[in-house]
Image (cartoon, rainbow, N blue to C red; front, side):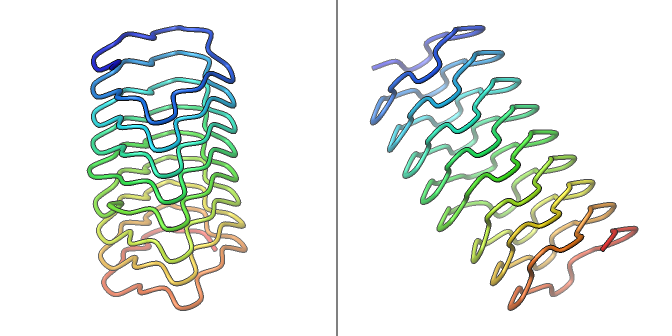
Length: 173
């Protein structure tokens, strides 16, 4: 049980946290590249400003977790659960969120999301303002009432996406 543990500025590349209980744990500024958090219970964990490149979070519970300004390029969040997650200004290039749950109202404002895989995910009312979604896959996503103002959408796949009442003010295609 590692709940509320502090890993701030830890050098933990390739560490294995699979199935760990990490509720409210602090990982700020940590090097967690290629670390594994498969099926971890990490509600309210703080990964802000951490290096999470190629980290594996599949099946993890990340409700209310913060990934603000995290470097999470190529991270795998497939089948993870998020509620009120924060990804503001994070680097999520080539990250995968296939079958992720609970991303309604998520904050991806200013995030770098080039080539991200979000196909079929429910992003209703999510804040994607200023996000770079170039070459991303949002096919079949529910983007109803999502905010995509000032976002970059060049070559983004959006076939079958629900765009009802979504906002695209000054978005670039």
